[in-house]
Length: 328
Ligand code: GLV
Ligand code: GLV
Image (cartoon, helix red, strand yellow):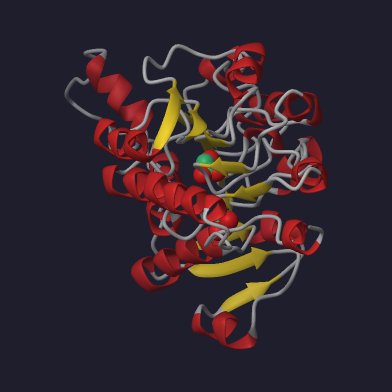
């Protein structure tokens, strides 16, 4: 009999059909939200799950899923999964790095530019019928990207891809912070300066957050950190919402202590802090970083290969918890 798997959110119909040829699929193609209780019920007799970052896999859920062998996130971030609890139960966890790196870097760069040049604000102005002549030369002027200093906090694959765009495409200077310093040849290629997070916040004209989310980085950027930034600087977040204290950000933007911000991620997604919604100097998108057609398809296909590999007794390509093989 085909193995039972769960697909928690809508995916490309042709890709779903491929899965249905080899598995019994309980899917959420209707895309009505599943509560945690519904997810737990749907997963209770499943052997595998293809999940989104909004599905929380915790010990309480696993308690109810005795047959579960594979948890395959269709995302690079996996802060929604209690990996230790999975490992303890011999459940293999995977994510989808690499295939989304360049697409997400494109989007991070796009958001940074949009914040700097006030794209959303100027479009709202035009759509509201407010554009009149004479148009003042100093109206809604923004900050340059070319030649400015790019500050990247979190220099993983995506951070490096954003840095390459800035340095090689836009002649930016690069200052970065990461838990570990880049290898010397990579640093040299980017003419990168390594600094503390405080150095990056102080020196950068445009700060981009691209670090993996853990409890350690909850509200990493708060009032104190925002106060270090230049009043002309922008802040962009394409990682996870919880990294920024949104009320502190709203305070800083309301008081023009920084120039602008661009967010693709929020602490309470899909709920948005109403103070952020009210700000004009903000660009806001609904967690779209990896959302190109080609990349979203590639993420699904990588997640499928991971699932198939796990069931065929092979190591999946993008394994999160290699310990699971050691402990079995
Ligand atoms: C999306 O946020 C991802 O982690 O891939
Ligand atoms: C995150 O996984 C990254 O590649 O930066």
